[in-house]
Length: 406
Image (cartoon, rainbow, N blue to C red; front, side):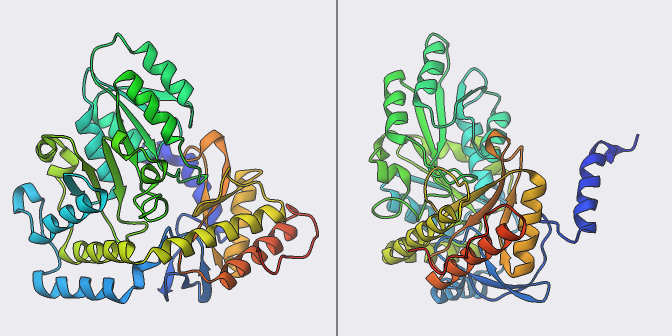
């Protein structure tokens, strides 16, 4: 048996997708025109699956900051911060993030994935307990594996089940660390953070909130769900990413916990990864400034999300439980999801297909992500394409496509 033969069934599925001319996991973009449009297979295509929540990837100030930083400090750091040192811009970004969240400490990672790996594996080790929401992102599960803590899953968004799990662990030694997300990336639902915070206090646990999809989206100043829920004091660590609202690459953690700098030498994903290049750091700083200075971006984003959600619901799609920038239509099968996705792409609309095991409850999802940069007309055009394709595939009744979702 050859080394990669174990993947033969999966490889066969990929070949079938390629032969059908539609592989949602390998879409070449010929050219990216703006935060909302690209050329795919020679066709101008509306982008509704990029997580570019605030549309800042083409912001002139963000681009100018990136270009200036490359000219001044070069294209890369060529090593980790432990080995090659920290640039001044690394420290400035960490200070800016800590200031934004009103925290004492900020820590920057090279990806959002590594932020979860680095923080979770460092906070809970052998003899400790990690309590994870069952629908947690892969990076959370991988961080739990890296740290050797005992892992306990609780039912998605269930404070009662979390309390039951902690009750059973009450007499067990070791720290108890709860990990939840602000907005969950598959169905776009939010966590009941007030209730989780109450459970955390009752059992003397620690709480980490991953705000990857809620930074720039929720809260009076865009800090995320913890701000919106009024429980920031209960969130011992906030973790997030730069690749959604901040239009770049990287991740971070902020905290008020004393002695947090020790994490820089006990977090292996931080220690042994090349640090972010100057252009990326500068662009993220500029994007953070735009997030803080332009609350209208958050308002536009959430208006677009509600418009898409309402429009698809009116067509008869089964969606996630609440409007958010992640709007997922539940498909009857993976085959239906692939077919729908391919037909939308052919019609000029790019979305995402999400399948088990990455999805909750084994669901097949056609996942959209909305941007503040989308115009209402673009959202309405997307709704009409969903209607046309849904009727063509027999997944919707023969009713006229909606001209607008008001």
